[in-house]
Every structure is written in structure tokens, then in C-alpha cells.
Image 1 (cartoon, rainbow, N blue to C red):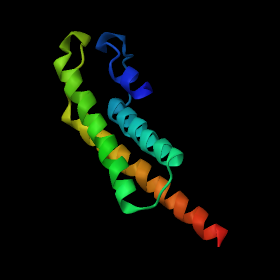
Image 2: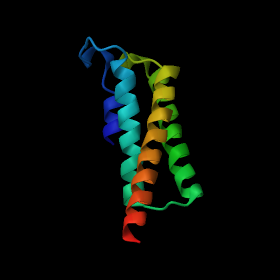
Image 3: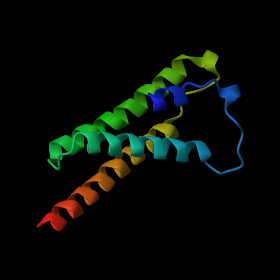
Length: 109
């Protein structure tokens, strides 16, 4: 829900920051956290499960960008670079979960 709300704040209400690619970093982190938390809630190391969450995170990012393009009155626009940042964030979330879960499983042995 946080991602949905954050991505639909009207453009004029978003503070202007002097950090290069700040919006891309936000997308990257939001979708990384999104996937990581969902995987914590539904843990599995099966490749289909991991792929499902990777595709879901990426698809959700694409969907949000499509809506931003359609809802131009918000002062937002569809940006393919945001979709790439969302997808990379989704990959990061899955990878971090996978590494942490494998480490935890190895420690239990």
C-alpha cells in the first residue's frame, strides 16, 4: 500500500532534492523491500516461488508506471527507467532473501 500511495503523490508535492537519480533509488529500495518482506512472510527457497515474487514485483512496478502515464493530472509520467529500477529492486529483494535464508539454513545444520 505504501508503494501505491508513494507513487501517486501529485508531482508538485514531491520535494525537489539535489541527489542524482534520487527517484530511481527510491523505486529501487521500495521494490527491494517489497519483495524481501513478502518473501519473509511466505518463505520458500523453491525457484518457482522466488520467480513468482520476482515477476510480481516487476509487474507491479510496470503497472504503477502505466497508471502514472494514464493519470497525467497527477503531474506524474510513465518512466521506463523507473520500471528498470523497480525490477532491479525486486531482484535485490529476492537475492537478499535467498542469501539470508540459505545462511540461516546452513547455521541450523
